[in-house]
Length: 103
Image (tube, rainbow, N blue to C red):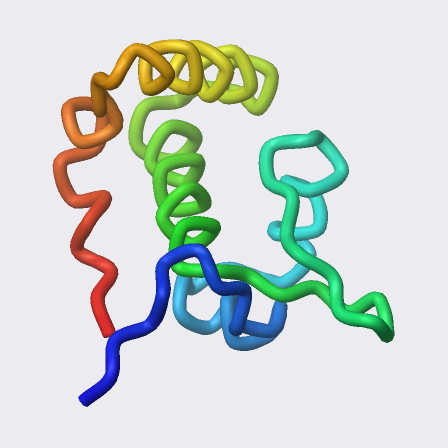
């Protein structure tokens, strides 16, 4: 079985929402708030990658599991980006189940 490139945007908004167990509107809100930036097709349809889905799972964990509001999530994601630029992957420490999304 072939593996999916984690950076390749292949999932439509409906499929991504189904996989994550959220309403498509939730994904649109995250995009409006600048928390995620899905790729767009030539017809301007959203496409999500496995990396996008993992990031959304982290956002859901922070909001639903840890009680962080979306402004706080934005700050956390910015800090994680700075930490990752230093070669440190801290995401798994914040959410141990982040990598459980497999195909």
